[in-house]
Each structure stands twice: as structure tokens, then as C-alpha cells.
View (cartoon, rainbow, N blue to C red):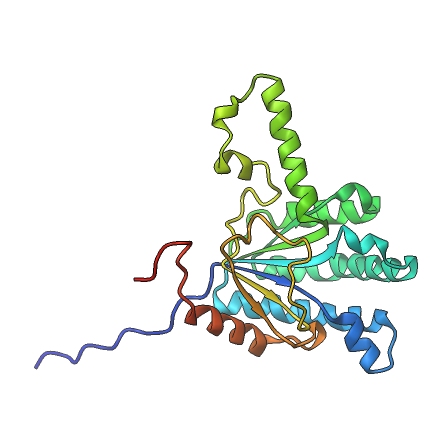
Length: 245
């Protein structure tokens, strides 16, 4: 008797690239009568949990919006708290991420970051460069409009120098000058805390990303929230402007 064929798994694959706007640390702290720094510290715990969950769920690229160009307008005390937390994270977590085959990439304007933070970032990127389980892209001092202007400026310099013809400037040529040139565009973009905007995050790259907004504040975000967003993503039909079948 022939063996009964086993039924293939019907579980859809996860999105290759998930991007997250981590929002709500301040409101989480305020609701508990705590300083904003406590919300940022709890938010760092959610970062750790989300990286672990993403790797276990088979996500290949995870981009986290850590600090925007607009965040520099916040009070100096809050910026100092955030930068101190960033230093602590870079010193304490990179070895563990490296052991779990996570590659670290940081995008954004590093000229505004302190020299010791830049050195820690460069060390983390070098140490984890060959890892291939999960690419963790952290956007620090990042703004999408600045990124696009920077790319346009670089192409303009090439054109003036005669290194590229105007007719050869297309989407592919432009994307090679973005900070995410080596990373595929996000398939799924998640924003926490109930806010419904992109806040200058990956404006070019998210042109066809599926957007999922959750009321969960970032410090409360966990694996179940990530799984729920991925489930919502898998229920959608991605047409990229074409008609539905």
C-alpha cells in the first residue's frame, strides 16, 4: 500500500523585511506616573524581545526607528537619557546579538552623534558583518527627507563630473545612493501607539509596504503583537498597482 502523502504546511512565509516605528514610550511612562526615561528603558526591553521574536519567526530584515532627525528638538535631558541608553545597549547587547548571528547596520546622520557612540556603532557593524540570520537595521539621527536630498546631491555631483548621464538616472540608480542600498524595501511597516503617520521614516522604501497600525504602546509590544501584524500582512493581497486577479 502506498504511503498516505503528508499535507504540506499552509502557513504562509513571514515578510522578508519588517520595519517598525517604535512609538509610545513617553505615554507609557506618563500613564504610570514615571519619568520619560523609564519609558525609554522599558522600550529597550521591547527592542530585545522583538529582535528575538523576529529571528525566530523567520524575518530576514528588521528595521527599527530609534531616533529621528526631529528628535534632536527634544529637551537636552531627554536626549542625554536616550544617548546614555544607546551607549549601554551597544556595550551590553552586541555580543549576544553576535552569538545569535544578527548583523547590525545603522543608518542616519552620524555627524550629530557623540564620537564614542559612533565608535561603538562602527565596532558593532564590523563585529557582526558576516552574520546572516537576521539583519538588524537601526535608524539613528535618521530622516527620510534628508536621506533623499543626500542621494539627489550625490547624483548631481556625479552628473556635473560627467560620471553619469541624465538619461541614466532612474529608480535603480537613485536607490544605489540611499542609506538602505544593500537592504530590500520593507514588506511590512508597523507603527505602535495608535498614531497614523509615517513621521519621515523610509518614505521612498515604504512606497509599497503594507502598513499596520496598532494601539499597543511600544513598551508593551511583544511577540504576540508582532505575530498579529504579520497575520494581518498575510491576509492582504499585494498588487503593486496592478489589478486584482
